[in-house]
Amino acid sequence: MDQQILEAKYKSVLKKVRPVNEPMPQDLNPPLSRDPYETQLSPNPPIIQEAFKVTHERRQAFIELIRERIKTGLYEQSTSSYASPIFCVAKSNGELRTVHNLEKLHKVTIKDVGLPPHIEELVDAFTGRACYGLGDIMGGYD
Image 1 (cartoon, one colour):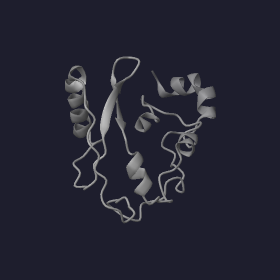
Image 2 (tube, rainbow, N blue to C red; image 1 turned 90 degrees about the horizontal axis):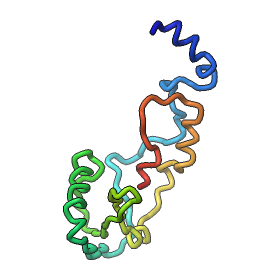
Image 3 (cartoon, rainbow, N blue to C red; image 1 turned 180 degrees about the horizontal axis):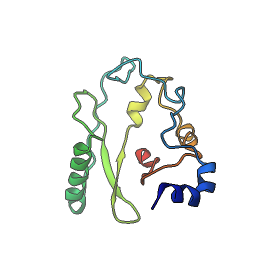
Image 4 (cartoon, rainbow, N blue to C red; image 1 turned 45 degrees about the vertical axis):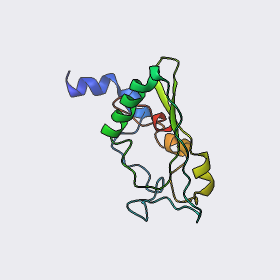
């Protein structure tokens, strides 16, 4: 289809949305002062929790889920002396959802007030923007 025909067809939509390549607000997520980022912890001995048991029926699917997350870069090798349990639960569609029990770690974490933005602020920044593709912005908050 010709560009002029497309623009005429979607003229009303184009008036309502900002271009997707418009810069994001610079103050939304200020640059990190530390790279790579290291979580600051209070001076306590490392927390080491035992892993939860995974049922035999879920074990292979759970292993595949972890491997996939490593492959995509969502998970990476850690050299931390802390260990928090991870387990999985079934979603309504039968897929597995990972659950990280970080309750004890959160208690000793020194909060960094510089990041990240509240998810609501991040989502609001996309209001009225044209988005090309399919994604779940809340997906990272599994």
